Image (cartoon, rainbow, N blue to C red):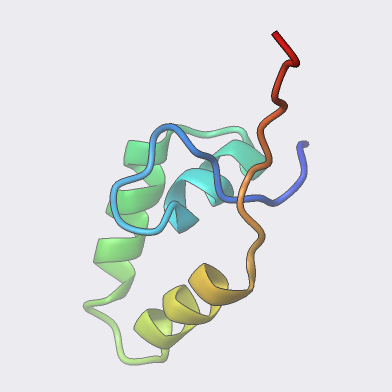
Length: 66
């Protein structure tokens, strides 16, 4: 498993589903479908998405000195 960070590539809105997909070894599309399906059920899914968007760090890039 990799660290839970929002990737720079593969984002659609905030990169939360892409980060979770990378963490758990599944595709981002699968994670997005699971999230949308879970929004049909009662619960705080949307608030959890917003909280993860705010609190998950973004992926850092390394810059070369060239």
